[in-house]
Amino acid sequence: MKLLYVWGLNALALLAVAYWVPGIHVAGVMAALLAALIIGLVNMLIRPILVLLTLPITILTLGLFILVINGLLFYGVGFWLGGFEVSTIFAGIIGALVYSVLSWLLSALF
Image 1 (cartoon, one colour):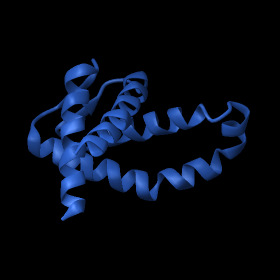
Image 2 (tube, rainbow, N blue to C red; image 1 turned 135 degrees about the horizontal axis):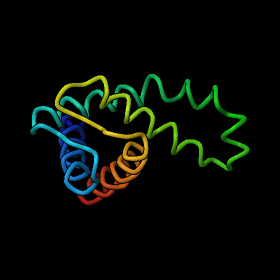
Image 3 (cartoon, rainbow, N blue to C red; image 1 turned 120 degrees about the horizontal axis):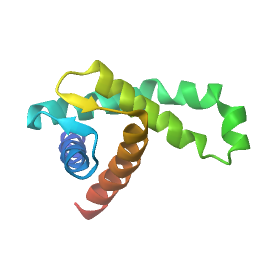
């Protein structure tokens, strides 16, 4: 039950990101639910591998390269998934950052 609750909060955060960040568009609630699911799966399966592979550059940039990884994954989900669009990589980086903060805040509040 908690998993469905967090999934709904993440979809709500994604709708807020689409409202606040220019260059990110979500077609509706169902698209936000599907995008939140895919983003969660990508962050669970692909992100750890990319973080491990890019560890030297992450150390050189004092961890800031992880923002780029998150933005690229966010952009990739927008490219792959219909109904969720991220227009540029910069919008993906900003969107991923705002999405992370909003998701954390909503989880902490509720």
